[in-house]
Image (cartoon, rainbow over all chains, first blue to last red; front, side):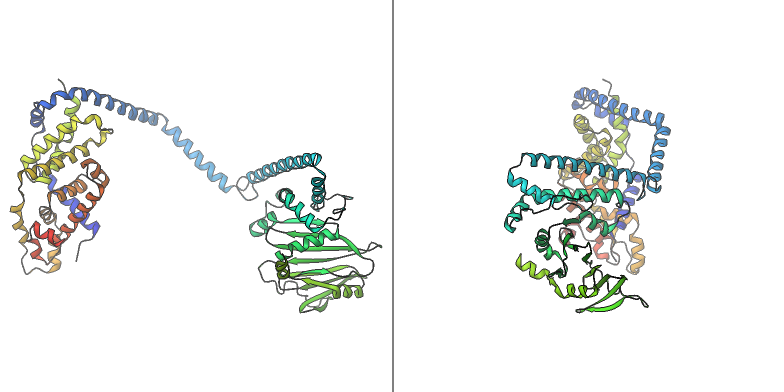
Length: 362
Length: 181
């Protein structure tokens, strides 16, 4: 049985304490007198003066603090208590500290103002650049204008790729300016998000929304080129329409993506009579979605097998059809003012471009 | 010349310093000499001390060092007479009874007498003066590693000496202890 550390410490302390009590020191007065008679003691006067100064300083410091504390302890205590209460109040009151609280709103608005200011300065920088730019740079600006946000897109905007540059030229120009333009677009997106929804947005959705970029195209060729470039970001194959029925023409294409992921591809077509149809492919997250869009029992929707996938056809009004099918990692919707026959023709002409193929090409 | 400040310091810390020196030496005369020398040295070097509140610990450490020096000079151990008192456990006592007895402070004090003066000095400064290892190192001018190893050795020796049911260990002298450790 050995003694453990703390037990030994305790024993040693008590032993020394007891021993100390038993020791009877001699008279300190007598020994002090003896010490003063030592020759070394004669030179201690100077040191004593020095020590007196130090002691006085320390005394003053202590006294000063003690006086201050004695005078102001109640006020100090009150101030400290107020601070604590204020912090608790801020943490607990939704008006100030909650997710939708006043302070947070103010902060968000301030950030919105800030990003708007940065955007304006960027715009003016870009404008200044384009006014002084060489013809090649001007061409790149026209390309930049072909990627506006759908929210800020103006009707009758100049058609992108009017001169239809080659792929190599486009890549070169994009390489020069895309980084700056993308940043500009992100600012726009963040601003609208922060003013509308960001107060309630949380977690992954908010993060994804903040990083997402929406690219809108009115020129089929530029849309196709860009889609080629981003197909490798898709979780599975991207559907395209190879042959358009009747006199349908490309109207608009929209690509929504983050830096690493393709989120959605939308293609809209219109004919001379103004009838439109669209193909929308929404890529899903990691979560399983089987059954999410299953046709409810008793629904008038017609179940249709689209290749290996389950889908359904909805006839909302005469001449308007919506075909939706659920793939492993995306939902595809083909809808518009189409005859049922035309719908099947389009379906037959669609081709799927797999991201793997695209990656190998890239 | 009036030495009011020094006199106050002397009287304030005399008892503690004297007791420290006595616990190291075990001899009144040596303790007295060590105390006087310690105060004289402390007063002479007083202008080097930054914090006057440390004066007590400082002068005690100096006294402990002087005590060791005095012991070395006289080259004798003053506690050797006390060794025989350790062998007073009757053979019939059970380990538990023996342990209870061993726990008494008297036994610990007697065990301390078997230590080397340097080891005892460390224990005195640590457990009587309540100084940390770092403070002991600074005040005695000894490296921290040396202080640690001395402290470890001293504690181990005390542990062995306090082990119950091993009366023979109580009779071992310092050289035997050193050899065992």
